[in-house]
Length: 222
Image (cartoon, rainbow, N blue to C red; front, side):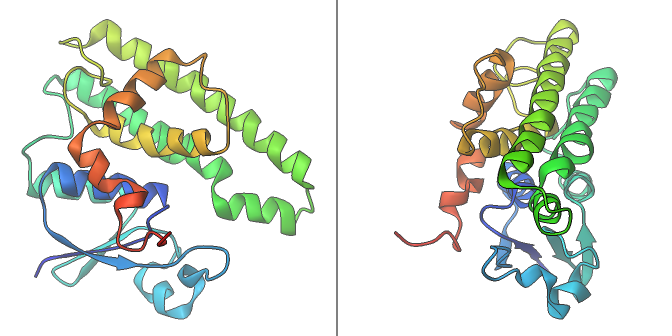
């Protein structure tokens, strides 16, 4: 059996997995799960049976359902080790995974859609307070990413525009979608030159272009 990716064009975690699939040239079926506020298909019973957390994405392979983007990416890495998502050096591999986990576990969860919805609807934060929450945690995340990229530069084996040199790694794959979200919301990225350099490099790489929201089959028609 092949791969089925349950995801949505504007979902950051789904974009990470799409990038890996395209980077490794793995064919897959795209199964759209409309998580837009008007639909919220992920909250229905049908998708709940696929992913108990009702989060995107879910990868289906050989009848097995896999959740959590980093776990999915590592599964694909084991099946298709070339090109690798990780640097060759052991320490760099640890740094690369640490950056990916920083995005997935420490940055993204603090201001994803369901958290922002809960702040407004259940805790009754007004729009101004919710925006302050978002910007506060976004700034902390950006500072951390800038510092982690600088640390990687000091120990990496080669120069280049990506975090660990001339080719993208799991670190770049996780950074890009998060920063693109910040750009859409108009956050000032000027102080974060290293982050911006990585984003620029990703945005001209074929695999990242194929995984971009506007190139997905469920992207809204003009």
